[in-house]
Structures are given as C-alpha cells and as structure tokens.
Image (cartoon, rainbow, N blue to C red; front, top):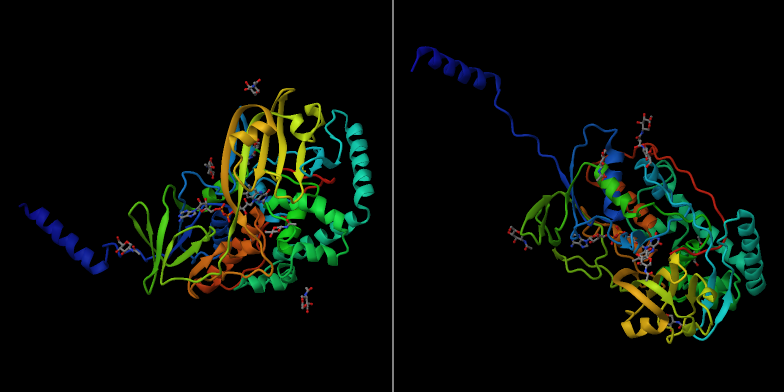
Length: 494
Ligand SMILES: Cc1cc2nc3c(=O)[nH]c(=O)nc-3n(C[C@H](O)[C@H](O)[C@H](O)COP(=O)(O)OP(=O)(O)OC[C@H]3O[C@@H](n4cnc5c(N)ncnc54)[C@H](O)[C@@H]3O)c2cc1C
Ligand SMILES: *[C@@H]1O[C@H](CO)[C@@H](O)[C@H](O)[C@H]1NC(C)=O
Ligand SMILES: *[C@@H]1O[C@H](CO)[C@@H](O)[C@H](O)[C@H]1NC(C)=O
Ligand SMILES: *[C@@H]1O[C@H](CO)[C@@H](O)[C@H](O)[C@H]1NC(C)=O
Ligand SMILES: *[C@@H]1O[C@H](CO)[C@@H](O)[C@H](O)[C@H]1NC(C)=O
Ligand SMILES: *[C@@H]1O[C@H](CO)[C@@H](O)[C@H](O)[C@H]1NC(C)=O
Ligand SMILES: *[C@@H]1O[C@H](CO)[C@@H](O)[C@H](O)[C@H]1NC(C)=O
Ligand SMILES: *[C@@H]1O[C@H](CO)[C@@H](O)[C@H](O)[C@H]1NC(C)=O
C-alpha cells in the first residue's frame, strides 16, 4: 500500500475520531398514529400541524391508516351516467366554519345552493302535504313560488314553524362557541365537559319530542315535518335525543352547501397538506400499550411504534383488539341503506296518474308499513329518465323497487353503518381511552354525527395531544378565517 494512502487513512481516522465527523444517530422524533382517514382523522392531522407550526422545536411524524383504498370514509361519491353524486355525508350548514375554512384553504369549489325542491309528506296511502317546485328559469317566478310555499307551510303548521326555527337557532348559536379563540375556550378532557361548556349537554339528556313539546311546537308539526326531517337525516324518529335532533333540523334550513366534485376532497386535501405518511389498504387490528409507546399491528402483518395513537372511526362495529382492553359504553349504529336508481317512479304506487305529480322529495312519517324513509330526484335526464336516491332502514329488494318504480336501468345499493342510534339520555365514551395517549375522536358522535362535528371533535383532540403529550402551552388564536355563505328558504337537500 502506498504510504500516501496509509497517511490519508490515518488522517481520516484521527480527524473523524477527534472532531466527531461520524453522524450521530438522529434524535428520535415521536410518531402520532391515526386510525381512519375520514374527515375526523384528516382534521386531527391538519390541526396538529397548524397549531404546532409556530413552534419550530415541535417535531413529530404523523401516520394515518385507512382500511379502504380511498380516503373520506363516510363521505364518498357515486358515479351514475357520468354524473357524480354524494352517497354519504352530503350537506353542510352555513355555520359549519371548519368546513368553510377547509374549502378556502384547499381552494375547493362550492356548489351553488340548489333551488328548493318540491316536498311531499307521504303517509303510505296519500300525500298529507305538498309544496310546489320552485325550479324555474325565471328568478321572479322562483321567488313567488317560494313565497306561496311559505304560506302553505304556515297555514298547515302555524306559529309552530317559527318556534322550531328559534329552537334550532339557539342550538346552532351554542355550538358556535366551539369556534371561540383559545383564550376563552378550554381544552376538553371529556365529551360531557365539552357539551356542558357550550350549554348543549341538557339537550342530550331528553328526547327531541320532549324538547320540542317544551319549546311549544304543535304535535302535528312534530309528527309530520320534524319526523320527515329526522328520518331523512338520521333514519330515526323524534324519540332520538334532542341535540342530534336539533342538528338534524338545522340540516333542513337554508344556505346548505357542499363541495363540487365531492365532500371527500376535504379529507384528501387536509392529508395532502399535513405531511402525513398515508397507509391505504391497511386495517389496524390491534393497539397494544407497551409501557413507552403503542404498537399498532395491521392486516398487512406490519407493526408500527407510536407514542400517541388516535382512533378516528366509530368502534361500535369494529374488532380492533386493545391491549390492555378499553371500556366504552355500548352503542348501536343506525344502518342506512342508500339506493341509487336510474329510471322512473311509478305514479300508481303513489295513487297518482302522472309522474310529474310526484314531489321531487318524498318524505315519510313514522309508520312501520312504509318501506323507505325518503326518495329524492337527484337529476332529471329527460322526461322518462331520472336519477333518484332512496334512503331506507332495510335493504330495498328488487320486488319492492319494481313496485315503486315503473322503469329501472341502473340500481346501486350501499349499506352504511351510518351514525349512532341516538338514545336519551346519551352516555359518552371518553376522549382519552386509557388515561394516557390513546384518543377517540368519535366519542363525540353520540352528541351528533356530521362532517363538522367530527372536525370540531378532532380540533379538540389535537389540542389535547399538543398539551398532554408535547406540553405545548396554549397558543394564541388560530389563523383560520371564518365566514358564512348566505341563503334562505326551507328545503332539505340529499
Ligand atoms: C348516508 C349518510 C348521510 C349523511 N349525511 C350527512 C350530511 O348531509 N351532512 C353531514 O355533515 N354529515 C352527514 N353524514 C354523517 C357524516 O358523513 C359523518 O358524520 C362523517 O363523515 C364521519 O366522519 P369520520 O371521519 O368521523 O368517520 P368516517 O368517515 O367513518 O371515517 C372513518 C374511517 O376509518 C376507516 N377505518 C375504520 N376502521 C379502520 C381500521 N381498523 N383500520 C384502518 N382504517 C379504519 C374507515 O374505512 C373510514 O374511512 C351522513 C352519513 C351517512 C352515512
Ligand atoms: C383555485 O381554483 C380555481 C378554479 O378551480 C383556479 O382557477 C385557481 O387557479 C386556483 N387557485 C389556486 C391558488 O390554486
Ligand atoms: C340544564 O339542566 C340543569 C338541571 O335541570 C339546569 O340546572 C341547567 O340550568 C340547565 N342548563 C342549561 C344550559 O339549560
Ligand atoms: C321511534 O323509534 C323507536 C326506536 O328507535 C321506536 O321504539 C318507536 O316506536 C318509534 N316511534 C314511533 C312513533 O313509531
Ligand atoms: C397535493 O398538494 C399539492 C400542492 O401542495 C398539489 O400540487 C397536489 O395536486 C395535491 N395532490 C392531491 C392529490 O390533492
Ligand atoms: C404485533 O406484532 C408483533 C410483531 O409481529 C408481535 O410481536 C405482537 O405479538 C403483535 N401483537 C398482537 C396483539 O398481535
Ligand atoms: C338516461 O339518461 C342517461 C344520461 O343521459 C343515458 O346515459 C341513458 O342512456 C338514458 N337512458 C334511457 C333509458 O333513456
Ligand atoms: C397568524 O398569522 C400571523 C400573520 O400572518 C402570524 O404572525 C402568526 O404567527 C400566526 N399565528 C398562528 C397561530 O398561526
């Protein structure tokens, strides 16, 4: 060996040992693992990144596990004859401020609020009540029709309709406290505390029927219009709890909106912006606490080490094994069967002569003999060719569909474990499942299940993690720009 090389090697060796050129092992950064890539899981990742960004010393990795091949969970679209329709969570309220700020942040396009559909209340034999279709090319005509409809509604239900509105406004107003700044809004360790702080807890302790009785609504309004709305939005009747009922009624007001191309894009965009390792097609089977970290095992036979674990999916129908076991109150999910039909309704089924007499939205009262909760027109291709969405508690079999429809060229069925079956008084699972660093976003779903409530719960969970695990002192108000979109008129969108 040449002396030069030998000297060089010696030199290299001495210099490396004396001035530590050898790389040190990188400091281990903690990992936050999130199970579920719906709006809840994606919102946790978004708020973790947003709220920790002003602190350069807060460094952590985020992994999201999703058993499906796509993100979005219960927000998903269906393609029928070249058009895209929402199959799950479809409408957003003008006061859903997180969803609004997501759509701005992600540059998503908001659908124009659709003009009101005509509504009919079907009792199994006849329509108890109908409004006129406001779909006209002339805005002037639309205004008049919507005025006529308001008069019709007022004539049937009287001042009760105004009392219903103020009941909803009061609940919406209280919910808005969840957007207050960090200075005035605490971090909540339990769902109960979170609801009590906003003055919403009492609404979860009694049924919607009792709450509306107290608010002075007439039995006719409760039996008819209110029941129609709760059956559409939650597949349940007025014996559901008051808070979920109020949320459901809020989803029948004006100014409702959605994301063009599909609400799932909110989850997709948030994950894309949050520096997340996304594991699609990977279902988590077990979460074990091993003294200093959690070990998450997936169906792919892989194991992941996570200092913080977040469950962002309902646990009610899952068999994720927790070691040690966690205990949560029993909760049943309400299954909603969504059936898309391309074809034409059968007027004879509704005791009518022509299809055009069937309202664009057929709602139903509570009667075990009525086999569906609602049927709505999604699109009219031409006179004999429409796309409909049917909601029902039981699957719609072919024989049943053949009696309700006179023609069917395409039928798509989805069985959703859609939302909790609400029972007053509600009992809530903990946000912190093990008293340590295992969190549960969907504990809040017993209050109400919507895209926005998932985001609100996720935001609180992100704050819990930052304060409990990272010891981050509450930052000043987050930089989210909130605004609302306008609109009015009573209509229910699907
Ligand atoms: C038919 C229907 C209509 C609705 N209408 C509305 C509406 O109009 N407006 C509204 O705001 N809300 C509506 N909702 C409710 C709304 O869709 C939900 O509340 C919301 O989307 C829930 O989001 P999430 O992220 O909490 O849960 P999910 O969207 O259910 O996300 C959970 C995710 O976790 C995944 N997952 C589950 N287990 C595992 C596992 N072990 N490992 C890995 N991944 C797992 C699931 O695949 C899923 O993607 C509706 C829901 C349904 C079903
Ligand atoms: C936002 O979207 C619109 C239309 O989709 C597009 O024209 C515009 O360039 C986008 N803006 C940004 C900043 O991406
Ligand atoms: C909730 O109910 C309790 C007991 O009935 C009552 O004291 C309290 O004032 C109520 N809270 C709200 C916000 O209505
Ligand atoms: C409403 O639903 C509950 C079950 O959720 C059921 O027990 C009750 O009979 C229903 N009410 C009516 C009026 O049918
Ligand atoms: C992710 O975000 C980048 C910009 O940050 C954008 O160019 C890209 O299209 C996004 N991808 C998806 C799938 O949304
Ligand atoms: C998870 O996987 C690891 C590594 O394969 C294994 O040692 C452990 O027993 C698994 N845990 C459970 C609960 O199956
Ligand atoms: C109905 O309309 C859709 C979309 O325009 C079209 O694809 C389909 O062929 C039509 N079906 C019938 C029976 O006309
Ligand atoms: C909010 O925005 C201002 C200016 O854009 C910035 O200085 C501040 O750090 C931001 N705060 C947070 C919490 O992001």
